[in-house]
Image 1 (cartoon, rainbow, N blue to C red):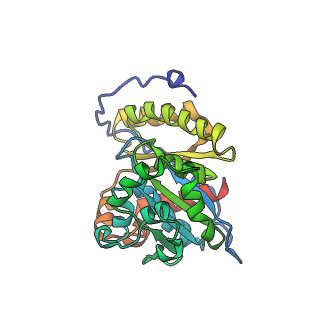
Image 2 (image 1 turned 60 degrees about the horizontal axis):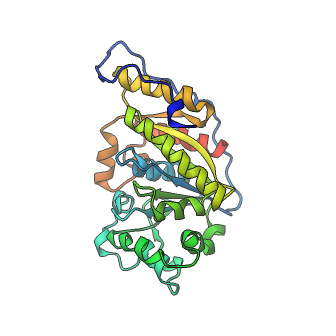
Length: 293
């Protein structure tokens, strides 16, 4: 969908409207997934948005933990040089000897030496740190540079049910690598007008990857995040994206809550830090939706 096709948002004042009711999620009607008797091959999913601060990392770690809670073996891949995903799981990014950077640039590095266990059963991590920022420069001259991540993940695909890739806030070579390696894309989108406008640009990039590099890639869904039902602007943006993209928008809506930054500081997923919170419930609902799509 082209950017100019998006319906306009009538108000941008963000003024609170206390009488407003939160948008209800119907995702809770989806039954819990059946337990698995075996694992793999993994479905690889990229969490992508070129805009920063839209909840990509929070959604990656929270969705991954929720999927692990349903008995899935999950591998989280930190493909952002900022290493926020690693930090969110309690990993000191500055003390790492091996990261995603080594996997992408060193043919002798094996993925099994890089994967870390987390405090959540069934949830593993491929960590990252600032070293990864050099990978794009080094990969530019490589043959098949867009497939470097896919080659690195190949040895462990059969050991997991889901691989979630937390992408950096850009549409550079690292993000293209993630999209080329994936079967699906989830687009976390803050319920704010400029975030909405950026989705059209991202969709154009995804379409190019589909046509040139990965014809099997599909958009699994658009995830509305940081939703505040008290503001007219937030409600209007959510209604606009639902009209514009229809069934591509997840029914689950992630509301703003202080529990998310608190969980990140604690180095735990929301499902472990505050398992009975509304945020944890929302990501369990999202996990059911993802498994049903």
